Length: 295
Image 1 (cartoon, rainbow, N blue to C red):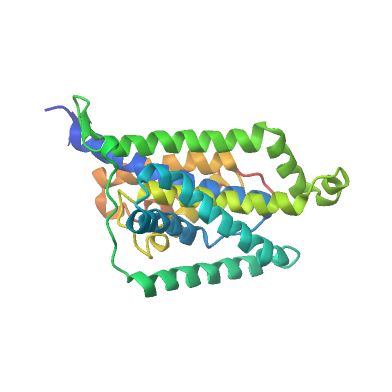
Image 2 (image 1 turned 180 degrees about the vertical axis):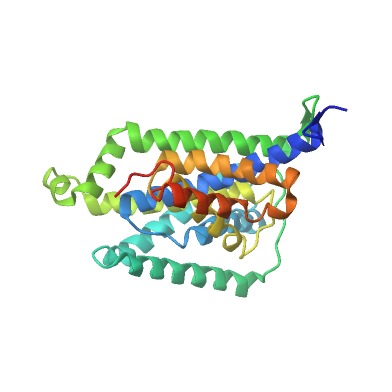
């Protein structure tokens, strides 16, 4: 039997796959956080609740309207994105000129309200969401058995992250967004509707979280607490990558997911804290994060 550092190859690759899947969700969620913080300077503590909303919208669409997974992948992010845009326009936008702590407290309260409402309506127990038939089963790669749906999650996560990075960094719209965060008055002088840009940015970040939630629904049970269990880890990923760094959020999300998966192979007792240990080390050596810019 082939082994790596005394570990059977199949077990090693299995944990590597789990780490890559977790890293896919870390990357997508931290990407949404980085977009919102980088362009709006808001620490969005409601991101985990928006992730949970995406999964619940997909579940409710299936239960009450018979909408399948593929349509839910498009509808759920749109619904949650519109909800996020409404919240930004009516409430969050009033806090931009205040201390950033107010934005954090508002989004924290919003998260508690959303999660509390769904916990009251549906209870704390998780509900299953079936894998779509087209992605059921798995593929034998010779050295391991790869579940088709998990392979799909990794692939679509990579495409989503790359597409978002290209949108922010390489398009005219992304240039307008980045310019608006640096000098709002000057950008408005050129006739750009900056408040609308900011609303669309927050809605887009919320939609990214909801998209990740729909992808997660067939893997993890749909629960009001599914975002709470993940958001602290995602914040650690963002801090390690560098607050506001789009590329940092993507690369660090995958790296830390893989590090967590491999830790479960070599030292399982530390798997729950390895990300926070890495965060502490990075902050000691580079306070701005791996890809962040020093103040």
